[in-house]
Image 1 (cartoon, rainbow, N blue to C red):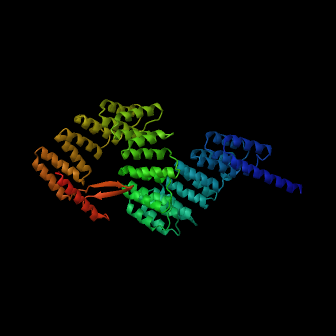
Image 2: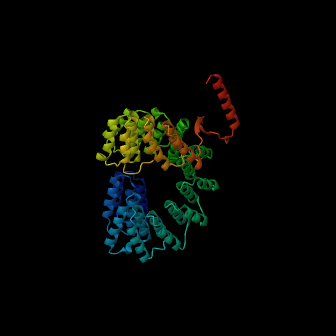
Length: 562
């Protein structure tokens, strides 16, 4: 009877300890729990210790993690369960290197690796995959084979992921093929690995072979097709889905936005809402980018209101997207409003605001904001300097532009990229320093792209430097041989220089290569709906009404004497 009473008492203490551990929200609470365990002599119960240790390491603060580690170091002869708890905790805390160090410590203390179980190997293999330590992972793989854990489903799944993360897709597939039993999780892991490595055709073959599929399978394929730029296949996959979740909608919306089809992305976002799917932070970032690309201010404001309506917290990423959207849509006041309302900002947030001010011709304000950024101790990056140099470019600030360009390498260790050289070439060219602009272009450590040559060309046309304009256009044609406008510009340059024979050659080349003019298009936003108009297009459902209205407007313009 006394024995049963002790068992009942122990059960009550364990339940009490578990409740205290679950409710521990801060380090002080953890200290109280620890004191309770010592007082009740339950500080040697491995199950309770593992629960307490996991709770310590779940806390986000460094203090809690340090306390948890100190607590672990005091445990005499921890069993495999305790070791697995702390090794996994560091993996979840995004410190896979410490997980592997603890694994090695475990092997040394135990005198052999025999203490480890299948869970230990699964966790350590995941740690190798996340830290890209393939050699260590291969060694642990060999040890798992030696100890007979290689047939464990969790170990095999971790191996598939580890090899794929290291872009060793052959070994990943070998492990997959050796598995006697494969569940849906393993199939999805292998599918995601093929997508990650860019083997979308093999991924599709595996997808078609799968005995069953879930939302993760379908969403992985949509993401894979979007990543490969095959928007048609991504949409076909999306349309075939019997049920869709938020990830499905966000993936297809992102696919359209990434390939420049912002209008379609916004239409899908509207359709998603009609289906009752509530957007999250990720979706909002995608559609705000689409609004910015199209200059759809009304739609952007509606999405901002929707963010507030759903109570979505504006973190750094979402706030930066709002700043970017408002600036791209021409509303610099609201852009600044969002910027100054944010309590936390990173380098990208500052950069977005600097670029926004620069693009609105507020070069001095952009440079002042950059100075404030430096004073607040925020380290600029290459994106920041695109904004800074653009500000100098748009405001014609030559000495400031040169100083900031030089400071990139001298003060911040940032190697200038194509965009930075493009800003400097444009700045020099705008001020008529065309020879200096060309000299900088030639000295670039990489081949100039079309944007840089276009910057030089613009300056040449303004300042009527025919020879250098010809050089710029010829280089543009070599880079973009099917762009109609380049040939027209070259033809016009030859005409201005009275080089009629050369102009005729250009015209013949255009006909020979069947180079056609791409129809112009424009967007009109009406009641938060964006309408796209393409020259000569008759696909709009109200085409006849549109053309009748256009004819009426033309008649009125003519009657007015224009």
